[in-house]
Length: 180
Image (cartoon, rainbow, N blue to C red; front, side):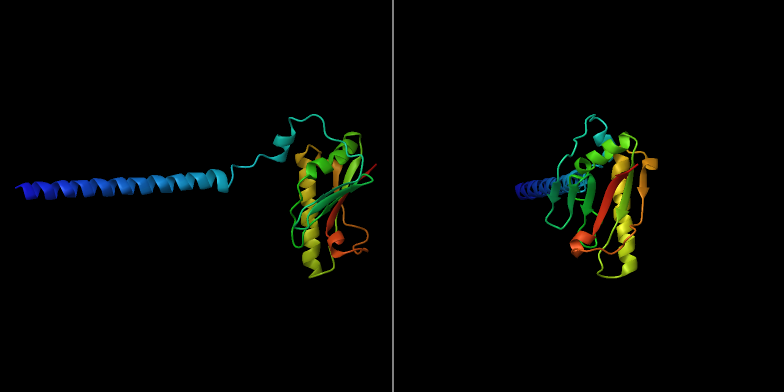
């Protein structure tokens, strides 16, 4: 009889151990899913307007500013014209877009209009490049909208001259300038 009790006791121990192990695995998987959902995929991003709304003062860019990102995206502000340079086949803006557009926003607030033009390089398919240039210009327009610039104060415009001098990296840009 003692052998039966010992066997039953061992079976109960093994069963409890297995149930505990299964519960531990389930909690581990749930924890990974929750972590992944909140940290890796990211908490839903706030719209740019919601982030920018609390600030009442926008920095005024009064000198040449260049932000260079290793992948080729950069921003340059010279003489009140903001140039956004893009990596090959990309429409992603370099960080610092809001700061670079401060002078444009101030100009729009004083009654001027922002003209956004997308350029592209000469490599690859011309139709694909033209569509990418348009998408890049729309991205910049959307950032301006998100920073509070009314849509009627932003004009998307095809460049008068599609080809230019310089390197392909300089050609992959969106230009934002103020007009009266």
